[in-house]
Length: 248
Image 1: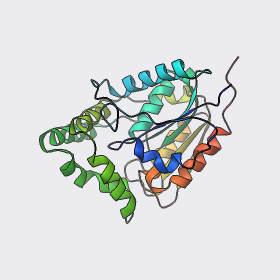
Image 2: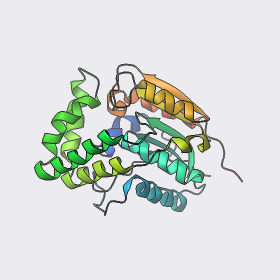
Image 3: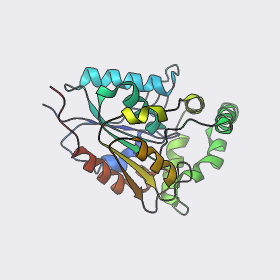
């Protein structure tokens, strides 16, 4: 039977290129998918249907294209929200799960209002001005290389795609009640200096999953695939060794 594919889901406001350093270090004996959210990167600018709708479409693709009907799914930040949605709504499609710098909790009222205001700013003035106040929080202090690469990728995105993603993030649901039922091998990764989903948030996420390991990545912030691709690739590679054969 063909090897179980690895699906990598990118963070906001970047595209699949956020995973380039990780992809280059993953085992070459299995396919790697890097799907993009609507309007990001090379993805079509479809009508938005939220985090759950994106996860539902991914579940359909896995069922259609993978003989065993399952994939190892890794998501960072926004991609982590989609990975959790996929695991909760379509458990039979996930063989193992890597959740990177993400959380199960929804936004609080202040967070939702901030995202909605961000969407208005992007639609009114473009992506660049929004990034000035947003991107520096996503990388560890002093990591100018990761910050520069993140800005380069983010500036290539459509303002409308960014605005729609902000609204989808604001509207996402609470996945905490679903965690106990996500009974697959899992790893939760978090950057030591993540200011957006800090280590205590990752600890709570890992504690809620029945079979999760927690790894704190030294020196990294919120965009660990850009900041520490070696560590992220190593964690995903280790997770592959925990994947169980599909049920007969």
